[in-house]
Image (tube, rainbow, N blue to C red; front, side):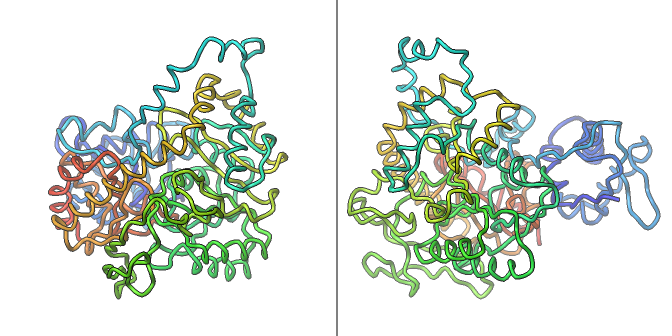
Length: 533
């Protein structure tokens, strides 16, 4: 019989403790029954033990015992001697569902707002004014030029495909429009790759931790996820490549999914040596690689920290990021000037110039086009409401992905694509603005945590909108459940792990400023004391 891990069930139960009438056991029973009725948990699934679920939900065992009892009396739960408690379904079609990744975007999850609390569940950034200006600049002529056809462009409108190809050429990566497929954001791009290139049971190598949207897409496809690396010092760099080489001695992965630049959720970026080692292993083993650069445009442009504990720019001493446990700690490096040579962490091959004016170079640029996919997007940099992403690959792979995409949505919005064409010309401006905003907000968030939670640990991110924080001694799954009951939504570390690891980690977004984090911190600290790992 299938079993569901307590960590996964916890993420499906988002919001249960603050919704609906009645005592806590009744609310938990109702939430579990709703999961069964919707088919979110397949009929016949064995639930975690009462003790295990109580620990991860941050409630007493008696609460779970009472909830299980209510379900059993209502015919929704069956106790099987020696096998545990099996949830009974309502006849709903069984299928894989997401684990609450987008809960902050739906009405059911507005728990934090309704309680006057804080929502830290999403790292999405507010939109840039450039989006509104690009929309306002559209004319009837822009649209009129395309009204002569049916409006369906499965691969994307020619102007945008050429614009994205030019984006790569400007970065020194030869690309033609025929190698570009426009998608509804990078999430659809990752989903299309999973559908087109992975069969159920295929081995897919992923970093640990990694983007949870990719984990969901690959799990939904039935992939066997194999993690490499970690998020400690050196994790995700040459050590990961060595682990991949060892793995390939025993199994050949169908593909490898990587985020070399501004990794989500850690914010790290591979340095030049690590990128070259990855390229070497991937090339030697002739592995198909999917490089997700969705957050790469959110690189902060800091100089890489030196390995001897001093800053790479001027020798200023930096706080040691290494601990006996191998966990990341705080690490302050002096900001590199924008007029410096492009940091090696981007892998860019440019002459001296403003880093805001150049695009990140994909790691896969050095690999055969037919054995790689690059995923990109404008949504992270400009605005999540602009659903424009893309895939760069060989024309053969692009055609395969386009065929699947056409069966789903025929094509992306032409109007959105016209806006995107205009925004491509404003990339340097947008990079500069985001970099300045995120640097300041990152620095403020770090200062806030140093003052309010000095025992928490993290490594300064090289990019992205969040801190990846270690909360020593706490079980962050239980912490997150407790926090939700006090109006604070936050995502625990296991949501980003293919093996439910990092149960002492939290992702704490700072992209909207530190007001929300400051409001949430007292609750998080209190819940951390109660959620002992």
